[in-house]
Amino acid sequence: MDLSALGTETRNERTADLDRMPVPDLLEAMNAEDRSVALAVREALPRIGAAVELITASLREGGRLVYLGAGTSGRIGLLDAVECPPTFGTPPGQVVALVAGGPDAFAVAAEGAEDDPRGAVADLDRIGVGARDTVVGLTASGRTPYVVGGLDHARSLDARTVAVSCNRDAVVSGHADVAIEVVTGPEVLTGSTRLKAGSAQKMVCNMLSTASMVRLGKVYRNLMVDVRPTNDKLTDRARRIVAQAAGADPETAARALEAAGGHAKTAVVMLLAHCDAAEAAARLDRSGGDVRGAAGLA
Image (tube, rainbow, N blue to C red; front, side, top):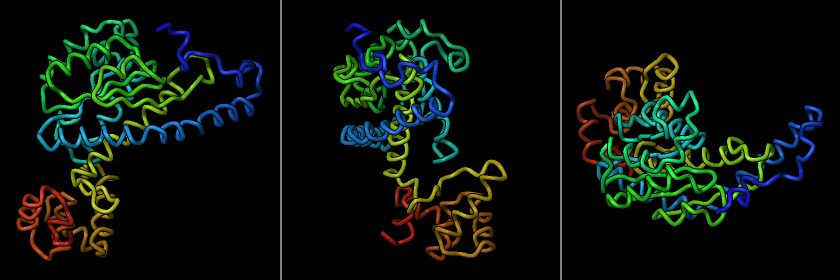
């Protein structure tokens, strides 16, 4: 497909005089364009939901969520992956991001790496991708060779596959089990897909990881009960989560959290089920980590 024919590469007539706009007008134009992103994501919700089911199945089976992308798209996948352990208490390596050009490409652009499909094959083989995993390929244009090649290789290994792009009828859509196309249209700055397309991909990644973790029982009501209290801010948040989830006063929540070794979910079950930490942990194990089931509230 001719790159110039892609919606993400065409000129935006509403910002044709961007270089002459006063700053307030320029910002208004950017904000007006950004408002369309959430609506474009909304159109893709059924496909996003299908992808969530694939990812949840992988994680339940002991597999992984593997993001794969180049440039901005790869960095967005990495941003989502690194937030999962502190937010959801995921073990190391359960949510992984591969960026064309390797880890150094996050800080220093390695744009040429996106043209090499063999690079994705090597990256996937290096982490041992297999049938229990779900590989999510992120590409604004929908035609990045690194992503297309990676998805093809993942499918050959019987992994589940998802394609996320920002153009209609994207090439990559034909290389995945589930194709998510968020049609964001021309950018404010022609071809700069770190803008609307980048925002759309971040929103989709937010949904994929968050919804999957909710389905896995890592959330109680709308609280991050698997949060890792690794600093003062997160320790304070964990105390508040326990207090809110169990309807307890701050002092009681703090004592329960300490008895639970800092694990908010265990402390919540202790207070809801009126048991000690060992019993709460056993209940959580039997319920697959679901607080409602462990506390007898299901």
